[in-house]
Length: 182
Image (cartoon, rainbow, N blue to C red; front, side, top):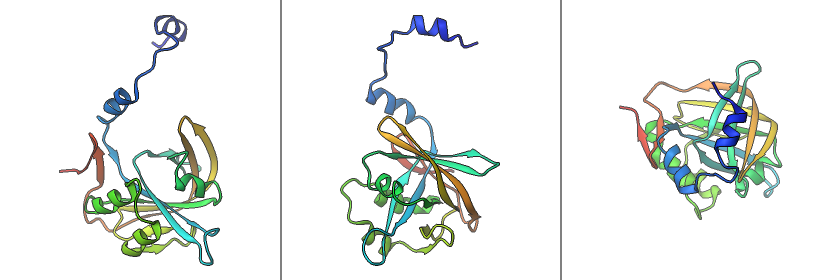
């Protein structure tokens, strides 16, 4: 049984895992890989699509249908999600490793060029790109944004959800590498 009073006295208040320890420990947790996308109307006459690879994505509630994604506070995606309230998530298949890697790169080429090379369609509810060949897609409307350390937790109400053709397994991330289930 957890006892907050006992724990508070046995663990010094200044105790904290180092970023390296934390990353190594959580690297032991296999995660699914998704591409989070949004359409930013504020960029140019036709707007601009933006995307980022994420592994911190989860279901929050079945009724109402809610999901959450963790977005780095200093990222382009966080900036855009602060302006637009609709976005989408594509659950990547094991053969979409290149897509995940391209949208995860720091200092990458523009999103405009990445989307030009990516087979996708526009979501009817969000206007955001949905990746062709993804295992599933969900389109969301932001209902809450919660600052959390160097990230922002974005909670979205699911407006639509679709399962793609069952052509393979999911892309996963484990011990710092993209992997697929055997």
